[in-house]
Structure formats: C-alpha cells, structure tokens
Amino acid sequence: MTVYSILVLFALATVTCHNMKPFDVNEPLSLTISPKVWSLLETKAVVIENAVKSIKIPDFGKRNWARMGKVSNMKITKFKVPKFGVSFENMNDGVHIKIKGVQLEVCGKAKYRLLFVTSKTKNVAITSNLDADAKLKWRDFIFIPEVKIKTNLKTKLSGILLKIFKPSDKKISRVIDRALEKYAEKIIVEEVNPHLQEFKKKIEAEGLRSYTVQLSVQRNSLHVSIKPKSAGNVITPLNPINNMVCLNANMLALINGIHGRKKRDLSRNHTWVSRGSSSRFQNSKKIDVTCLSPKLDCELSKLTCSLCSDIDIKYTSGTVDEFHNCLPKLPF
Image (cartoon, rainbow, N blue to C red; front, side):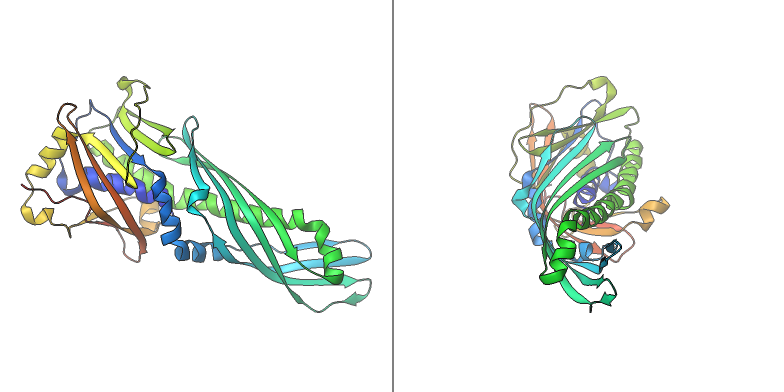
C-alpha cells in the first residue's frame, strides 16, 4: 500500500478539482501528515500483508566437500507493521521513515545431503522481528529510494538441519532482507513517482512554475510546502493537528474556486476524478480515497484556510484515481 502517493493525490484533489482558479502564488501551499496516518497500517493490514506475500524470495544454499544444504520455496506467511513503530525523521532534501518491530514469518522447504545420503524435504519456519530505514531523496518530484532492512532471524530447526543451517542464519536473513528492500524500492519507483510527476503537471498548470518544495519534520509530523523560490528557506513552525492530513492554502483562491460551483457539486457524496496522461501514471495502480468528515477552518487575519480530514483508502480496478467526500459541505 503506497500511503505516501495516496496523500500526495489527496492534496492534488483538494487544490485542483472542479476547475478551481489558480491559487495565490505569493503564498505557500502546504500539506501536513500527522502520525495518525499510520493507523492505516492497522485498518489496511490485510491488504498490506497480501501485497508483501507476493514477494519472491530467492533460494538459499550452502555446500562443502562433505555436505550440502538448501532452503527453497521460501514464502512470507505473516507481515504485521505496528502503527506505533513508524516515525518520520528529519533529513535534508527528502523524507526519512523508520519502522521498528515488524512481525515477519517465512516458511520454506529444507533439504540436505551428507556425504552420499540425501534427506527428505522438510518444512522449515523462520520468524523474525524486522526494522526498516527508508530514505527517499527528493529530486524534482521524484523520490530516489534507499531502503535498508534488518531482520533478527530465528530458524525453527532441529537435529542435523540445525547443525547445517544454524550457522547460516545471517546469510539467510540477508537473502530475505534484500528481497524486501528491492520490493520497497520498486513500489516507490513504479507507484509513488508516477503520481508525483502527475502532481507536478497539475500544479504547473495552476501557475506555479518557479517554485520549490520544502520537506521538514516537526512533532513527528511531515510538512510538505510548495512555494515560490523567492520565498526563501524559512521553515514555518508547525502546529499539532488532530487529523491524518491537513492542507493549507490561500483563502482567497480557495473561496474563489468554491463560490462559483453549483450546489449539487458541493454535496458530501461528491466524487473527484484525476485523469492521468503519462503512460507511467496510467500503468500505476489506481486508488479510491474517502475523506472522513473533512473540516474547513479559515483565519481571516492571515488570509489562509486549512482543510483537514482523516481518510480511508483502497485500491480500485478502475483506470483513474477517485476521491470521495473531500470537500466540506458549505453554507453557500
């Protein structure tokens, strides 16, 4: 489940839907993602686990002149990420995510040969606690992923199998680690980056061509700000939020875009559709996002508005991304 791409598209939906007028390029547009978003790791645990179960793990073998052992057909049978084990960490030019305490179980088939005697194939179970460190370097609306995974492997073996394979726990662990790292990096490149590039096209169409993207972590929340390069690199202090995501934008642009809409377009059941144009975007998995009780708050003194919401997500078999109920019901 590519949570980050979903949040990027959520921001895109609330800014560019329904032919909204271009926002004021002299004020920043920003998206805040709070730790509450990691609740999706529990509510969508089955989806995440099923995706990880599809990972192919290479066979592992060791041999010398007297004996040979092989573990094959390794498959992930359990993958649970605790929501309190995930955190944003600050880094220059990117996003740093740390994950601790993932529960991992792998099953496989073990077989050995001792001199000229070959054993029968036996089932082998591998359990582990997994820690992950993902650094996503930001380069013009593309993330360059560097994912490091470390497992604390425990192989459930006995007898001769224990003697043959136990010394190789670290090597088997590395085989599993590398398979997971490649999968995570592939998700970023093939699923997240196409959405980011599509987002870039949208905001350029809204009038932001000479802009910069600033990413920072405050209070364990990720703050993404899109603003003109002339605005400098000053980081605005971040106030805590009670929702998964909050989008902040210039109030005048927001009201101008909303005011001209027909009342039927402001119903709580409204659906926004993003139509991708690039081949990579068209080939990436599409998502269905529902905003849960979105709230719009405005500060007249600062001419800004915040649209905050919790979200629910799922993959869709459709050809476009869809957003439901992501505009609050307004009195006008």
